[in-house]
Length: 398
Ligand code: ADP
Ligand code: MG
Image 1 (cartoon, rainbow, N blue to C red):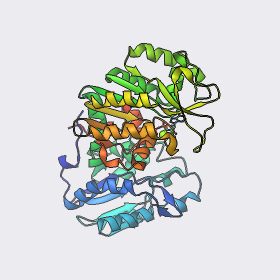
Image 2 (cartoon, rainbow, N blue to C red; image 1 turned 90 degrees about the horizontal axis):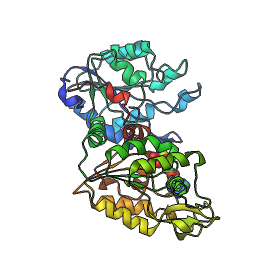
Image 3 (cartoon, rainbow, N blue to C red; image 1 turned 60 degrees about the vertical axis):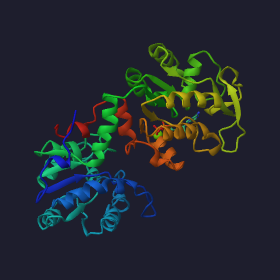
Image 4 (cartoon, helix red, strand yellow; image 1 turned 60 degrees about the horizontal axis):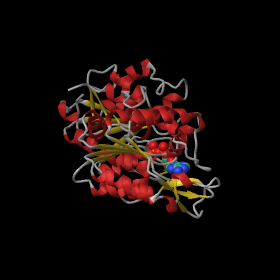
């Protein structure tokens, strides 16, 4: 379903509420990764250039006790945003009240204000995270239209997205949300074929719904990572000390039967005796995994098999590293697959969803080599599961 974006509405002179995801990591009070701020700039700049009055807000971390109010203030983010925009950003250290309302009233066209961490409203009664109806209504009263550009929280129904949307006439997507909707949503709805899904990560149990959904849509489902071993076990192989979810073996059998040959697990793995970055690595066929070794990565034959499938693909969706990529020695499978995707960039749509998978390709320095890297870990997972995301559903249809 096509959604309205900032380009579909009149912005000049409007008080534009903009829900962004500025939930950036902080180290010693400093922003250690500002990617989320950078990603939101196109939408903010567009609103300002159109003569809108931008009222920006976001959550930052979780607020459990009064001490969090100090360490989780968005003021440092407002400062950085001001530098990046080369423009004043009025920061109001409140989430409601007269000071905020007055500051909004004095905003001129093309000016920007940011208010405090929306989760400060969680301190008493989780008003933001439980979508307290009064809070959504109040925030809606501060503006004329709502722009949602926070994909990272799109799988949650909070006061700052769904709550406001329920109480305001117009909700549209910003450019970042639009990208996520087009690339993930659009691809799942209408993929160019062959469509290859690559799934990895630690646990089958985290990804059951993703596997099921992608089995319905994709032509091939390549499985690696820790979760592959429960599948190997289901096929009757001994897997030594590899990750195993005993209670998911029957499910793995069911999925393999359901897949009717679509699932490709490969036939060799890299093992180690201990879970350690310095541990010696061995190449083993799946039928020869010694009882005192554990699978840490996909093997060379499996890499070649996966590369072959990738090279033929017109669409690839990848979620979950194929090995313990945090240890360089066991990152080869994940890196090879990333490089194969970079190679087909001009002929295929390549999408990466999942927090650790995104971290892996960024760590390899390959971030520019894909059609799209999703900015939402949990949200992209739920999108791949085929779920309706409340923070997307509440955006007006075209
Ligand atoms: P994502 O965040 O991309 O969805 P997950 O959170 O599901 O990915 O899984 C990522 C984790 O899986 C990584 O920390 C990685 O080390 C781990 N992993 C991958 N392969 C294995 C393996 N063979 N054994 C143990 N852990 C693994
Ligand atoms: Mg993860």
